[in-house]
Image (cartoon, rainbow, N blue to C red; front, side, top):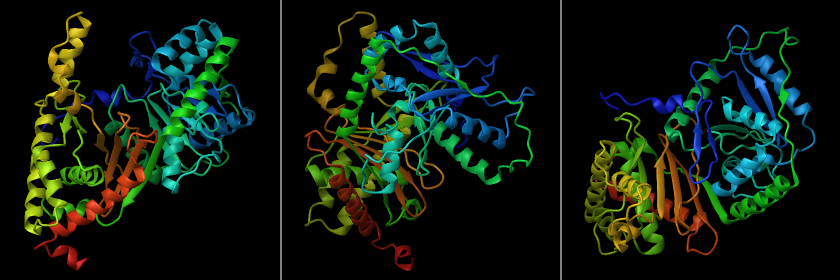
Length: 466
């Protein structure tokens, strides 16, 4: 970051990694560097197949050989299997109990271990005609975030796996990520690498010998009546969650980071203020607002909270919505809010935020059986950590965006990818009567960007020349 080196540990923790359910606290499986993993697992029709992706020489297999393996998987899985994978969508305590029963069977244990130790999962999905969405991008997001529930491809997943590459029937391609071992940045870099590789990938050699290559190994599961009942409960629970979650993948096409940079402000801080303004415009009050800051300047650093709601952001929102305020007043309020956010973001990246320290103290007290400090029950602390906006900038090549769900019942999830002349958003909220409305938030956000550009364009000639 600038001239400072960053910790790269997360990049080593996305391949061959899996979350394992356990009572009270889950465990993580990391691959052993001294024993390189040589297989992936392919899921199709709820069935799982182990595929070796390395030659005996240590070379990665050719695209032609991989294609032969994938065709063999599809041919061997024409009928859907029991949706064992949907168990990984359950509440963690529930899944821990079911998992304990599942792996008591030796056949099941070997199959689960093959999934857990694989480099990653490749999910070849079936149709999802029951899903509806306002646009193609949102439909793709639904398929990749949760698979569409029991009527879709949610059983064609192992959600504990760090990386699941999903390929849909309509050509959708995305990555479903289990967040525990790493942030989104290494995964976005993986996606960028794939896009670059595809442009220069060598063509398969004609007449390539594939006969001697090992066939895919079908991973078997013995499903007891108790496990079958657990699968049915998991299907019901996930279907309820899928039905209750409203997603919208959208693009603001008025301008992008290029113009924002011409305004001499941080694009991320500018977008954060647009989110604050949109929420205030819609709900007539400010929202506790989380943005993640990377702390990889430190060894094993993960994240710190950027608290995007500030005295300056509230003043900015009120000023923008006050018809009596002049354009200059609005511009100065915006610049002050952007500066406040930028300063906080810099402090958070340097380890000077407050939230991770307070969380650490709270967890240490719980772990040691100590009484939690009254601060954590104070209404001001409780309200300020009830993040009604959860946001993250995940920049990536191409027309991509990351999506995730809200973290509180009455909140919004807002992830974005600022491109040169557009900004992609993944928005989400729950439908179940908590006062949130994704479509209304989207509309308020689009108007906010328009209004902010009008304010910043005062005395700025570049936009008029475009």
